[in-house]
Amino acid sequence: MKKILSLALAAVMCVMVMAGCGGTTTDTETATDGGETAAGVFKIGGIGPTTGGAAVYGIATMNGAQIAIDEINAAGGINGYQVEFQFQDDVHDTEKSVAAYNTLKDWGMQLLLGTVTSDPCIAVAAETVEDNMFQLTPSGSAVACVANDNAFRVCFSDPNQGIASADYIADNALATKVAVIYDQSDVYSSGIYSKFAEEAEVKGLEIVAAEAFTADSKTDFSVQLQKAKDAGADLVFLPIYYTEASLILTQANTMGYDPIFFGCDGLDGILDVENFDTSLAEGVILLTPFAADADDEATQSFVATYAERFDGETPNQFAADGYDGIYIMKAAMEQANVTPDMSVSEICEALKVAMTEISVDGLTGEGITWTADGEPSKSPKAVIIENGAYTAAE
Image (cartoon, rainbow, N blue to C red):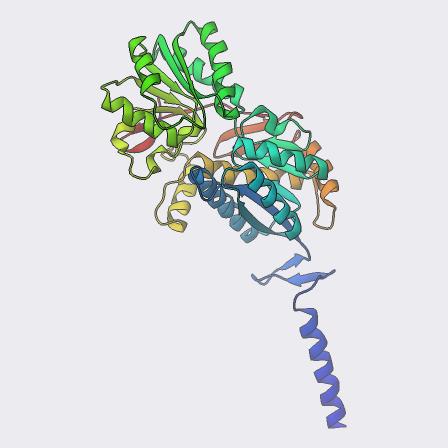
């Protein structure tokens, strides 16, 4: 009898152990904090450059998003479910970005935070619309990034950045004669420039030089700078990325040209360019929705957590975009009451509606809302580089 009881007890224990290990569960399971959490998990993917010339953007976005994921899971998840997050490197390349998307699909991704940069985002958007997968780009600002009804964005669009830049320059009387140096081969840069030129005329700003370059000629800017200097431009508008901007500032210094340099979110990261003399960026102004030295509690908490997690680094706008992106997804998922057992398409259809119903107070704006065309509504801000740091402009 003792042997029979022992065998029966062992069998029961074996079944209990097997039920608690791996596999898919249908009831509730014990969470690590001792509470109860519903079975199943949401899988959110992310795509952006973590290597290559635009790596500063992708790494920051990934880090900011991971902080948000960890906070949400610690607080009980989304609709009672934990969240898994995986981020893939696309090296700011369209083909690699599509490959990264397919890798995440194989992993089981249900929603996409991505991509970080515009051209890869447009390529991936062609895939997500076919799959009817919800896509929220943290910083893909080209108009085409959210051309489909399944795609939304955290950041301002290129046209809005161009308009806001012209308005800020004019409204703050920063200059009357403006030169522009832009990348005509890049949708981000050319898109901003186009709207900037239109708004500059409305605001009475004179564009005395508009000099283009391409991806094949982005190391020597002496001709563009000389034309700006000869035209008497007291401000040079740079709707470009930080790598090229660092070369422009270096070459302008060499030729003794010292105008105000003004840019958009693409310049966020210029202080991290390897071998760049950051003193040359002193006084550079850029429009960005996030300033790490802002004194509100949410910003300071995020900055402290980021520094603690990532070797004392100060988060940039892209880190804030990634962080806000995850919380925006959370707000929409809770509004729609989605669950992990829903299909990718079912989740997407629910979130298309929910995104137009929510309002989010984030690091990059208060009371952010969205229209069905995927565009956010929030106020632009400006920062100025002072003493080697980004400081909120007056």
